[in-house]
Structure formats: C-alpha cells, structure tokens
Length: 340
Image (cartoon, rainbow, N blue to C red; front, side):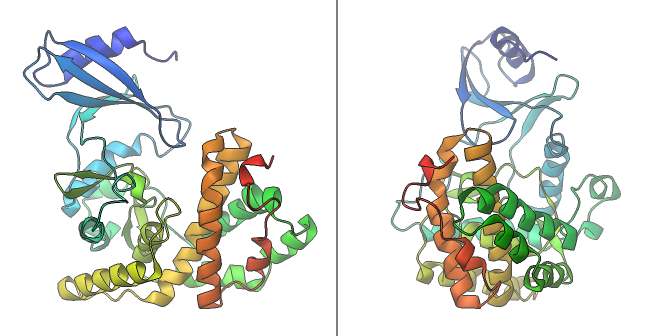
C-alpha cells in the first residue's frame, strides 16, 4: 500500500477532526523516535474545533502498532490521562488524535525544579501499575502484548549482545559469547520473571511523557503488557536522555514507594529496581546499536555514553552480572558516533 498523500490527509482531516469541516489544513511532519510510525501535526485555519491535531500513519511491520488503540482503552480503564482519538481508519492505518502539545519531559529537563513533573509522571505510572491483566475486561485483556517472562528478558539480553556489544565492545566476540551464557544472566531473567506482574508501559522514558498545563500524559504506550513496575521505574530514573543525579533518583524512588504503600500497599524495592535497570539499559543499548549503526539513524549513537555510564553505576552498586562491566569498555569510547 502506498503512503497517503498530503492532500488526502488534509481532506480526511476535515472529515474526522471535530469542527474542521471546510477548514484549511497545514501539515508538518514530526521527525522523532525510531519507530516505523509517522506523525504529522495538522493545524486548521477557519475551523471551530481544536487548533491542531496529530495524525499517525503506521504499518503492520510491528505487531504492536495497531495495539495502540486498544492500549488507549486499557489506560483509560486504569484511570490514567490519555489523549482523545478522533478517528481511526484501520483499513488505511491512519488515526487522527488530540494534540497534547510539543513539550515532553525530556524538553523540560532544564526546568528548576523538574522533580514535581517527575512526581506527577510517577502518579500516572502508578495508575497502570495498580492493575493486572486479570483486572481488565476480557476484550481488553486479549489485546495486551505478550508479558515479560524469562524468555523476553533473555531476548533483551541477547539484543544487547548482538546489536551493541558485538559492535562496540573491546572484548573479543568469543569472550562476549561466553559471557552471555554465564548463569548470572539466566538467573536475572528467571528471578525477575518469577515475581508477580502488573501492567507496565514498557517504554516509560522522558520522550514518551508529554507535559501539558503542568501535568504528565503518557504516549507511545502500544507496548502495554504485564511485567514488573520496577521496569518502568528503571526506564524513567535511568533514562539515558536525562541526567538525573543519584540523589534525585533516590528521592523519586522513595516518592513512588510511599505512593504505592499509601494506596494499594504494594512494595517496590531498590533491589528489584537495580535488576530491572540492568535489563532496561541492556535493551536500550541494543536499540541504540541497531538503530544507530544497523539502520543508519546515527542520532541514537550519541546516547550510548550516558546509557553505558548508567549501567556501569548500577552494576557497581548492585554487584549484578559479573563481567558485564568489562564488556562496556568501548572502542573509541569518547566518540561512539564514529564507530561502524
């Protein structure tokens, strides 16, 4: 199927966005992220509806792309803030959605103080984390992506070795292959998988949180599934895009722990956060390697040093995954963008 033309998107916008009948529509392509979804910001002149809307054009290359729409209903059921979907044309794989604005948590990172925005973000996460798949209506339960189990955690570890370590590490390939098969990695996957699971966002990082009117809204949540809430916490607190200090991480973790204890009594431990942080940062480095070096999206390579630094810090503090720190010594570590 050929991608829709701009003229088609403009005319369909007038049909599907409330109050845009007869309006003049301008389109701006939003270039951001590493997915195969394309986003446009549509602005209307002469309409009576919203000033702008977001158009998402997606493909069926990824199974979770169409899951965005059922995931929206999952978040709504859980009480989280979500955008309004004006219209979804499943046949054409196009959706028209509420425009929450241009400011994400990453762009707000220089605000002083930024921690109130993080606390509101954690409140939104808690809305999701208080629920399990079993608490959802059946028609939503069946739409969730496959949950985190030992096999998925092991896939993330393999993704790290295949897409990142094999490309960038100074450790020879045969030693990397031996390292990935040591018991510590299997034990980490199995120990995380053995813990009770709740609903999680799956990619809970600063660029997937929109800030509007001082409040946090989750986006890019099509990967919602069952897993450990600590995975989302690690994704946010050890986000390579934002340089949070150890003190800020500790304060935010304590805030979330108190929030959960005071509402549903759930216990979230620093030990499991460290385990989840190892997983998440390995997954992120694998993604940077694939997108940056494999797919030629070199902008992702500049996030490698921060992700490596965060992972080294977790390893040093927790004692997890012996030998992994050696694999994080990189070729031309000061300039990873020059690497193949």
